[in-house]
Length: 453
Image 1: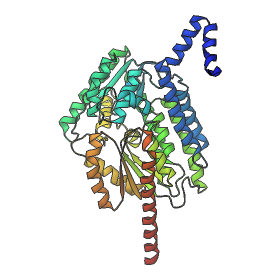
Image 2: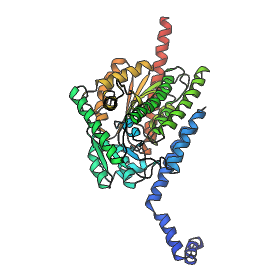
Image 3: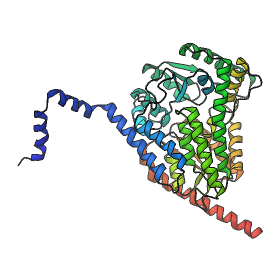
Image 4: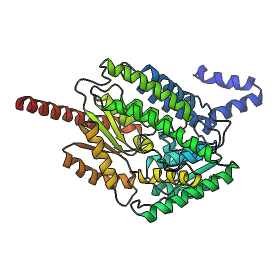
């Protein structure tokens, strides 16, 4: 006997006009539409977790949740009225771009959907972030923007540098900035200053926009105001009890990648105000015994915020971070002696080299110093160090960071992972065990102090 339910679609197809049938087939089979749908599902799933899986969320965070939903789920386009400069690293000087009334949009990607697409171009054992970024560029599905006027790449990450040929073959116009691997020497600093001066001139020619002393001064102040807003928010994380969770900080800093900078600053200050009110009331965003975590290593890029999410779901709280998607993005401000054009350009260059604590440098004493300072200033109980599988610099560096933490007597959990959601159970178990060990350690320490008292 034939199944009548199976026959029904065939009869419908016969009665439809051929062009309608063709359109429907195209809609069903369109790989780009399917890709976008998977992205939207991935983004919404993470947003739902971040928004609803924690008690007493900050009302002011609604702007950021809505922003990510608009851009990553509903494909809303921002910045349609300005030139767009795609950046592949935080070492691209934002101040120079803003001074030409253009918008920098960071292209680092956190989608597992795009990581799978990018796997066609990269070796299996390569960085998830690079694969996902390649996948996004190949699909030409750029969040928040319709097209890029210019794409800039500094020679920081080796895998991105080698992937540039593939990106150029996708018909993107890529500008290369040579970034030094040693920053202690005056030769390296002068070399980078010359690179930034050349970038300033070349970008002006490319965009057909002139940079002026006034516009650069205002851009430096604009970025400075954003940094001050972030620093004000970050100071609240030093408090005990802490009034804001780390997952909110990561979402805020990820929004800086593509949002209007002045609107971002305004909305970040609103979060500051609400968190400060909560601090006055003694509100605790975490639990009574939640260990205080320093997060470092490979950057958490939306929607791949699974590790920060798991840490705070395990009853810990991320009070500090050192990565290129958060703290490092806002660290040092431009220090200008004389507000003349060339002095300002050199001052901007210095900010991006002197303050950088990326592990790509030959020596990483600055990074160790920065981590020590964060551990002390934020009263850290433990460190979680993430490395994307295949990211050699973070994989190689973790041993020296582990040794540094041992000197301070601070436990460190090393996690090697990718964007795949399949590792969730195993990762959660490891994180929960680490958090529980920190709680036990903290209790013993408190008992010892009470006994001594």
